Length: 248
Image (tube, rainbow, N blue to C red):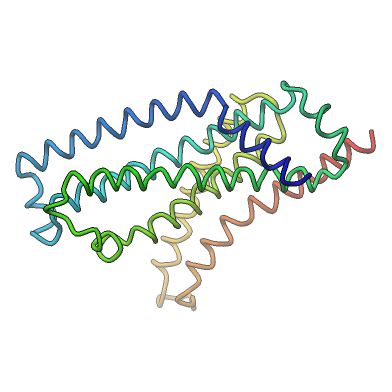
């Protein structure tokens, strides 16, 4: 039954209209930015930013990976928000929750489906990189993708970052069926969280060795704590909300 719930969630995410619209916009933006990068390299604009350390094909490939990661960091949370907020509208609360009494099992199945969706979305970067390798087959060594570009690390870091963003979007969307409200709250959270982390990290780095005894790894610890606290708070709030709903 758990596998069926995961499959339902993945299908809902892949069939979401928000995914189709945002993916089309993201694809257009990637093509547009890569056209600009290709034109800049053609005009000789690469020599003053790499000093010959990176070839033009490798620079374009790394740019594509960065742009793709940026687009997926926007597409994935938007899709999760619209899919999760559409839960009540599609009467899934009646059709599914009547058969599945365990809310924890239901939420875990949805999170597993979201994780698979994020992994699948990030895997689409591989065909794009493969196409660039074929375009520059005489100028770029594919082994450099694993050594100089470190494609595996970029893929894992992008997937984990997108998964965290989707987790926050999912938890926020569980409190409302209005996707616009969930989107606004998610954007506000992203802005304030990143500003707060930058300020705290800057304060720690700036006061090392002055009057405060601050361990060298404290800034990394604050980074992980700052990102884990919202997840814990939202999870507890959601559990309390579900508990009150069950009592009614």
